[in-house]
Image (tube, rainbow, N blue to C red; front, top):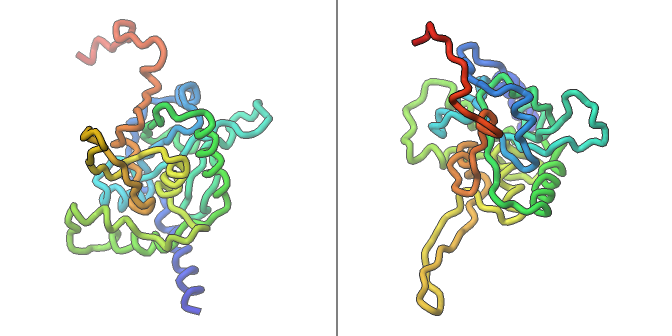
Length: 251
């Protein structure tokens, strides 16, 4: 009975968190066409969300990025669909779903691309994320976020990441960054692993990577990762600042 009540309350609060923040302003300069032209399957799109929930996540992570989705490319045979479902994400209300790129074209975004990810492993990463479609959002996450929307004592910076290690850890539930982290960890692709140092039999120094638990990953980790490159659509191709047209009155 208690669990049923908590589920109902969680869904209601999720609706509250999923409402847009009226104070959000976008400085995005990427058009939908520019994004489509450079995106490749396996790319991670970070989003500066405009929702109430985004405010809590950005505060806890001290980052611009509050949400992450993974680009899968058009998985249908119909290439004439104007706005295909090319992103997979964990939505607080709908759970793990596929959504069109247009959902985030009006928001500030960043493209993070895994470096030298093999075609075979890229397909496995995409398939992993796709296989989770239909899973529910981890509503325990929602209750944990609730306390940050009301007046509370300041949270020390060193504790903020640990406070994001929330969730029930049930395999049929997910939150945005942990879903993507699990997908890449399934092929042993690093994001921000723990690094320890050792030596081999010839006394050569070695770096040994340790997998961090997926619940500790947040959207900004893909931005900070040394194993993901940042792709900017406006710099792709033949960018030349000499060809830009400036408003002479803006000097």
